[in-house]
Length: 85
Image (cartoon, rainbow, N blue to C red; front, side):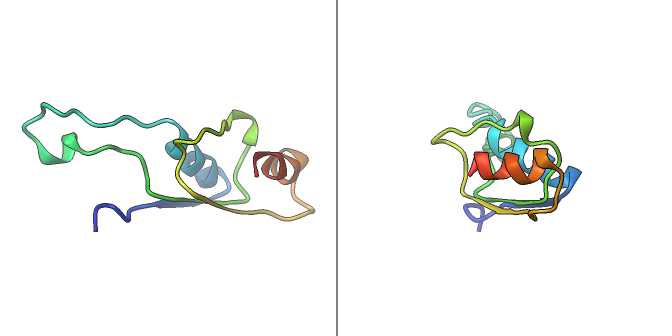
């Protein structure tokens, strides 16, 4: 189902997953290629102890996110993810 495609990442991959949910385009409506007409916005993201959260921004257009980190993680992760939430 093309409306149920998401991305999950751990550590640096979690940072990339978060960025994928925050920086995307709507696709190229006039393209002959069906894939290029699709938006690259994921329908959901899973951020598992993602890398630096300083680059993350939140907007109503962001997809739903699952966030997991530990109290003992680096402050930019543990505190950053709490602030992001």
